[in-house]
Every structure is written in C-alpha cells, then in structure tokens.
Image 1 (tube, rainbow, N blue to C red):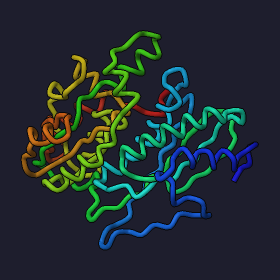
Image 2 (image 1 turned 45 degrees about the horizontal axis):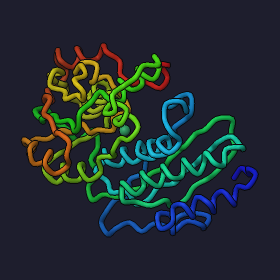
Image 3 (image 1 turned 90 degrees about the vertical axis):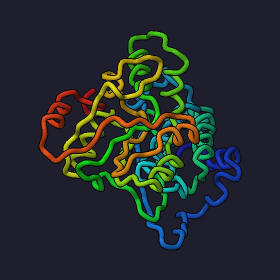
Image 4 (image 1 turned 180 degrees about the vertical axis):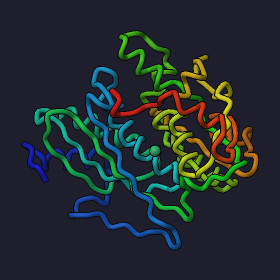
Length: 302
Ligand SMILES: [Mg+2]
C-alpha cells in the first residue's frame, strides 16, 4: 500500500461515512461465502480523470457514484447479485475533502445496488482515479456467448443521454436535466437482469461501449449475425435513434431471448422501457456487416 499523509485517518473517516455499508472491512483481505450452488462472478473497472471523466463535468459525489455503478453494471450483465465491492482510489495528496465527497458517491452507488464495501486501497497520484472490483454471484451467470440464431434482441431503458451529455460538456453547451441525469446517475440494472434471466434471456451485455458496438460484441461471442432496426432504439428527450445507438456508458442491458419477453410488465415493474429492436441471424449476413462501420465508444480512440 502506498502511503499518503493521513492515509489511515482518511480510511477511518470514509468508514465512518459508510457506516453499515462497510462493516466488514479492516482485515488484510475480504472473506466471502458463496451462496450454496452459486458461482462467483468478478469484474474490475477503472475510471480515470482526463480519460473517463473531467472534474468540471460532475460533482465528486457523482464521480464516485458513476465509477462504482459502472463496475456493478458488469455484474448486472451477467445476471449476478453483488456481494461487495473493493475500491482502489488514487488522488492528489491534498485531496482529503475531495475523498470524502467521492466516498459519499460510492456509498450512494453501493446502497442503490444493495451491496457493501468489502475492501480497498488508497494511494497518492497526480490525478484522480477510482478502480472498482465488483464481486457477485449467480446460479447460472449470463454470458455474451449464449445467444443463438433466431433469438430476439431487447434493450432496457432509453438511450442517448450519456453521449449527448459528453458532447454538450465538450462544447460547453447546456443540456436538459434528463440528459445530465442519465450521464451523472446511471443505474446498474441488477434486479432487471435477474428478472430477465428468469424469463428466458440466454445472453446479455451491458451497453458501455454504445449499443452498436456492444451488439457486435454479443453477436461475435455467440457466432451469430445481427438484424437490428436501429430506428426502434428508444431514446430520451427526442434524441436521434441513430446517434443514441453510438452513445457509450449507458449501463443499460442488451439481451437475447428465444421467447418474447413481457415488455409491458417489465416497464411497469422497473419504470423503464424494455424494447424489442431486432433479432439474431445465421452468420454472416448483410445486416451484421452493415453495422460494422459506425464506431462506438472506444477508450483508445480519443
Ligand atoms: Mg460491460
């Protein structure tokens, strides 16, 4: 562990803020018990200042919230229930007040996902970064490779917000409250994923790189083609569906199902739409090649 001035004091203060959300931490490592018969599902996600966010765009509390929610979204994509998160936070040494705001955002995310902080690491660095390891479990985790030709494709939520927000931030434009909220306060679709898995979904991916890109990831992993009507992609605020399908960091789910899913029941239960946007085909086909051209969100393309 890298030593920063007041490191142990800072950790104690974060624990105090988290209260029961971090009761188990304090040993050299976390101890977890997998529920009987379930498999452990683990994912790590890094969030760097200047790469994934700019401080001017969001409050520190929102930055902390988003970082943890992004990691939890990967568990949702596997239809896993979170068992806890480990955090590696690096920030400039003078940032102790910043850290408490970030900790409050972490607390918001952990509470929203009904999970806990089970460990972490704090170190000094030139810029802020939050790396979250999310640990979960599931009886039968969903993967990207479980889809078959003929499966129906559905997406949760309404897309486009994060892409529009980032564009507006970069241009210094204003944006609607709804667009900003979709960027600043995404939801990891954990309960939604488990509900969908129980109703027949056989493959899933979270929309972190943009719907077009992530649909290609799922199709490639399942060795199938895509037949998607991009005009059906639901958007917020009347945003253009085509642009919305390129919007990254959505943290919605794209799922494949051999049976029709109860869209109205989903919307009533979770307060967000579930929309059928197409289906999977034998590969290769014209549709899958047609969607290759537009690029989604790529961290190395900036
Ligand atoms: Mg993902």
